Image 1 (cartoon, helix red, strand yellow):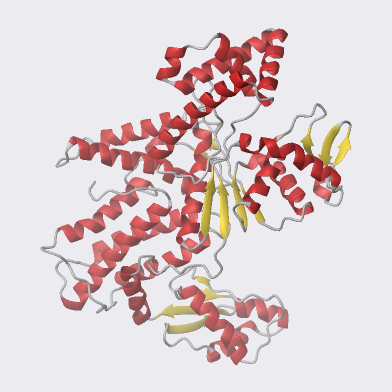
Image 2: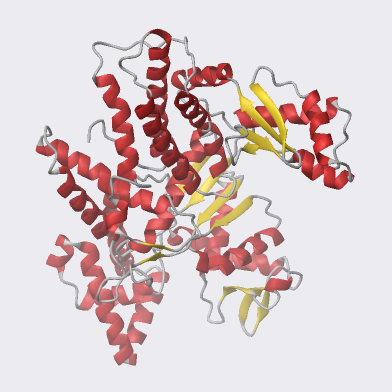
Length: 569
């Protein structure tokens, strides 16, 4: 990566110039904000100059004189109050381009210290349909897992489904009294939701029904054979539908370990926390207090209710034990909505008290809104089903694709599937994860602008170049970058390596989405400025290589977002 190389050389220049860096001082190089001055820049001299109370511009000139970057840069300048600006040479860009077209990882280096990372995402509830609220966790989590694997980490994806809880008391009672078995065969989740809603309404009107439901739940928790059988059937039916949805989304999990997996571990866990003095009894309940953490001093973590019931926190602590002990996790990422921030702050503090050193991160996100700026709901006020969103996206894409000529019906259906599903994913992943955004069909399916159809079309355009050529094309290492549009595209391609690593710094897939959009724009500018097919010799080979590299980076980058491509569109 050019940025890493320049950073290393800049660090060495400080040493060569006899400039001692203060402890903790980090030399950094970033992509230039204004390419008129260069490709990369550093404000290290300005920052250090303030600390050393010396002229930052003079310090920058001193560092510049000691820099050894002749193999990378054609020009280094000191601008403004002391910015160091680096302009890469055509030879270095050409070499990088050659690496991209030959390397399966497109010049993206593997991490120096690979880790085992558990990514916890999606996490729907059993016997309930996935809805639009699951979009953010599912797509962000899947993307982060893909990128972490791509750069060399060992990733374990775990779908911590909600398969145990108070709702099952109502479902058990409803199964025995009002279940429509024919409807269950036709659409299991729809029927289970109907049963749950019906019984829930009954409990509010009749205290006796509520008592019956609680008794059914207790029987389940105590291992009653009939209730366990019903529960297992509910789980199996729900998982069948979940796997159908995940297959449509091209989202895969290594494990589906739900809350029930940890039932037997909860009581011993609580007793251990009490015995070690981490937990204590308060008003009959078992809690962990954080008296040494000011912001949590009045917010204890409840791990067992006074009636003996366990909570989400109890299950999550047992889950952490499993991930550390069984999977040897170095890091655990929880891709869960921002409203759960307090829960995870408490959870991580309890883990810290227990001496668990595994790094844990709550990767929070905002909400999806309707066009009215309120939570995205159906007209009846219910959550919009995820399957319905996907189906409508594909249907809308199919209307556009139907107008294209030269495709069979099967090809049109496949293209509509790619565009529709990709559009929903990209609409999510192109946003900063903490931003609330409005769900807009017209915007996400537009062929222009920052959308999946635009990027997929850019990929198709790169492939069309090679379809126009007669016979197989052999690209050679003979590259000569001379035109500004060639240089701009080569520079943008070189930044793919940096971008993939940058995503995981703050777990922001939108950085990759934004990069791919810029790459597509840069390619279109190159395509308009530089004729590829009529060029000859080294110039033609260079331009074909740029097209090939762009094609591969777009396909790979979209793949890291979980978005498929199509060769024609």
